[in-house]
Length: 168
Image (cartoon, rainbow, N blue to C red; front, side, top):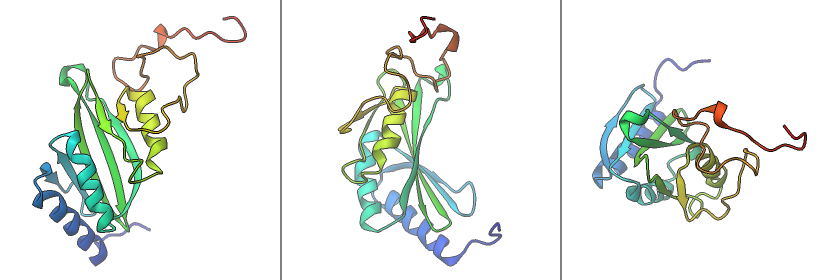
């Protein structure tokens, strides 16, 4: 069943998230693309840990996913989206990072369950997650070519030649 009106809990959660993100100047801008969503574009990756810590202190949702976004070579940057949910409210922290030196801090010390999302981000988008306890491959084979990230827009699948047991 789709909720047609925004509940009071959702409105309160989004208001608290907006207060946290704008009161401390961590955000460049906020947007509400839907009645139950708040998107917050952070000024830099340095702002991520303080804002996530503030959200945890206020018990403002759980981390539901970390998403990498590649707008293309012409943008010269990547974006990492951290999605938090509380009831029907979805709060997304958008972190722009340079394409050629993409680094974000690990949320694992604050949210241990973030490790799997962060490892996926590293191998699929080439984003370095500093402070990540385990940085091994999660999905890709061990012989996957270095600096080859399958979810970036400049990835060419034809260029991949993996060694397999079958000798292909």
